[in-house]
Image 1 (cartoon, one colour):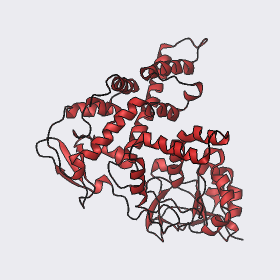
Image 2 (tube, rainbow, N blue to C red):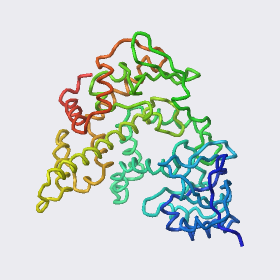
Image 3 (tube, rainbow, N blue to C red):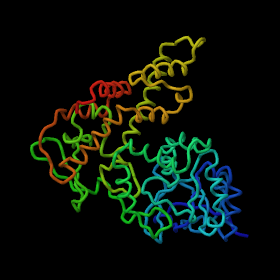
Image 4 (cartoon, one colour):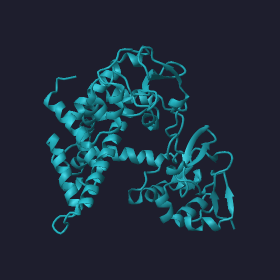
Length: 421
């Protein structure tokens, strides 16, 4: 009888092959028995439950025949692995189950139900589910983020369900939604998709994405304390950052104080955003991720600051709970943009962020940034040495030490003065 198998890290990366499927931790814990049966149906290894892992004697660094991953979580650095037939490096985490390729091909529907149970994961890919090809994080986590973003089309889907529009009309509505985000959305998307390797059964990159830390660094003449991160081949343009803090600092793109307040970021934050097929350092998709994450982070911080202040005051909760008081403060804050929050939004930071990002003020500001990126001499390879309106010190301050209220105030000013650049 075959032994239950746990997959552990060794001196070399764990070996996968294209077509292996990785099941998220929560679903693995809940459906370990079913996953083990599915994997064994194609001659794969029996899969132990997370609770059985300690007493499981059979260990391996070869994941091709499946098993239970035992090791670090993504938050702790993850487990390094490689897809041996493509050479693609990936990161997995302890607690996930690995399904043999042949078993996955025969049980796509069952595995999809398991992996998406409770909204924890994503559907298995149609061709058996390639191993994740992103460098940072597992494929299911990256797709889960995408699903949350695409929920902006829920109202359109509901219209189809209620027979209010045809599928053809739905496609038009969705296209219009994306064009509101960027007037070159589909041109940018086409460029991104052209970088995929069409021969693979999943989204495999032709080239490994580069990190900013593999770039050459040289000083900007005439601007003290600023350095340029430059690609080795010179094709990816330049990114100007402050030497000590890594804060993005480019007077051709971030012109006013409000640009740093609304969307300031560091080179580390930009480098952490991985978009499959998009190697551009200031691509629209990457910037949109950065700006959205910034808004969500500030919403979380605002809620915590209000909760902390109320707790210190020892407020009377016999009439209103702390949560209700926080919601009231949040509702008042959103009045800067004349946004009326619905009851189901208060507990969902991503929905709250979407209200801000979908507002005319944010769209107008975002379009200005897009236009500057497209026109900027720094992207074409010619660095402007002019000093901007914003000092280096203020750029660092506005990037790192603003609040949600500051951001909404600046967006409110944009609506009041839409022609100012």
